[in-house]
Image 1 (spheres, rainbow, N blue to C red):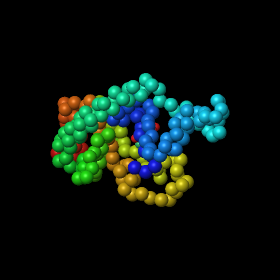
Image 2: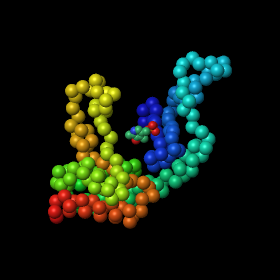
Image 3: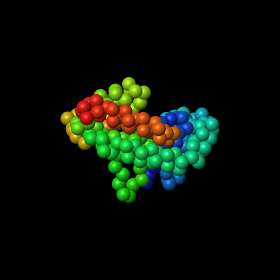
Image 4: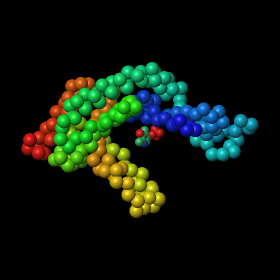
Length: 203
Ligand SMILES: *Cc1c(COP(=O)(O)O)cnc(C)c1O
């Protein structure tokens, strides 16, 4: 897709090399350029000669070996995540004020993160629910913060509003999503969510 694709193999991704990533492209010139850029931009015609600025972004052989072994397991990891997501959705779909992630017909979600929205009907805000879960040993993460609200882009997007992104940022969070999550752990998490709802609404 496009001129190039960028992939992250950071530690929390479905397959990981600890840090690092890869670029895919069908453009041989671009491939040569990015290979050179990651390797200090050493010039081919003269040793230790730099015509432009490069980086030390090489992946080590050890990391690559981990990545290859991970890639062999990718289908299984995705299968686990899809199974875990289906169980989460089964347990949470009738909970008032909790919106579970939709999957449209022509798309296969790999559930890198299992994401939910907390609406007013739940009786607790997203942050109150996260605190309730944290007190019971369940770590969660909020959705990412939109570009236009990031300090570094504040001037660029000044005065612009993106209400859907802002709503998602305020109401969304990720439940534990590791491929290795067990059925009983997911049932425990859903049970604590149920307790939170009962405590918040008295139902
Ligand atoms: C993975 C990820 C990153 C980190 O990517 P790297 O290329 O490994 O630095 C940053 N932001 C989001 C939203 C990500 O999912």
